[in-house]
Image 1: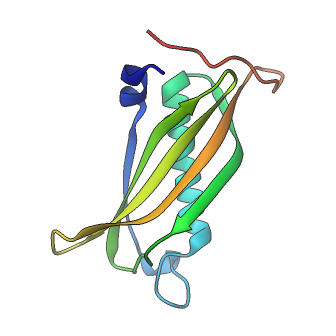
Image 2: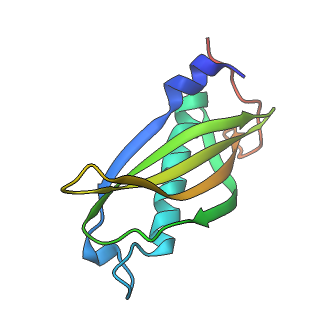
Image 3: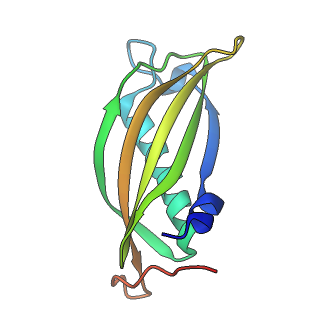
Length: 129
């Protein structure tokens, strides 16, 4: 695997957790977390290959800690495996308290993407220089 290409494609996005994205427990709704994770994974996969990529699976998403309203989250996407036409992206969500240095991992998951051509058929992942 090209570690330089992986390093260049690491994607970090920060979001504030507002009440409209929470459930009845005042924590981030799981479906919203998964959608944010898939978006970060997609951006990571695209930055890695610079090709059209589509999500084909989400593998084991572990919700380790609830994410309360009124916190900041950081989502980090990193390519974890590259195959011929597919690649895997690991996404982690960290919780940061707004008014302290407290930071902890809340969610991890892995997403698989396939590179496609204009006919939506799988094509080889490009290895960039």
